Image (cartoon, rainbow, N blue to C red):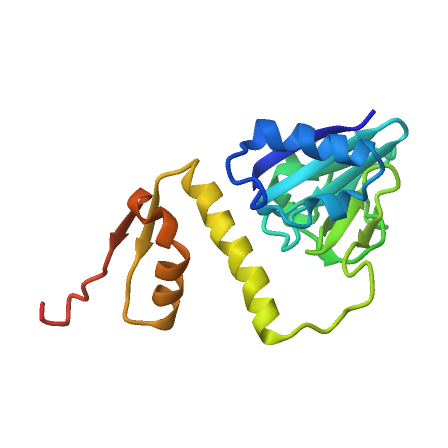
Length: 212
């Protein structure tokens, strides 16, 4: 049986109306039917970490950009600890972090205990998942060879996802959007066209510029 635990927030641009309580069972059902966890979560936006629980298996799966960070270490008895901030690991009995600071390293190998007795703390890299049994992190993308697409096709695909992600977020939160004369603001206005009534817009007035 597949169980998922969420930390952070997750949005589904393919189903903008779904909240987290609806997204997780749908994802678990897909994975239970044999779909790869990363294929199932590829479209998902937000800032999140999923803990996947299966008999004899445990995986920590972050959002594709690694926006929700994770730091991990292993104690002398083999226990693996994961935290959103490295300083939190210092609160675990038996964990010694050198001089009270993070020994920050990047890499796929499991964390080790240094000869000094201090624990090595690793940061989970973006585009990597963590095996909660072995303590090893592995890259999960790309999973198949790249294929060429035209610029027009790329814009069409990404713009639909972007618009639906904004619609999903606007359905949950009160959003505000800053406006300038720049290209980014024009893109945002275009993407928000269908939900503009839910958005609060504002401009920044520079104290050294006249009102006009």
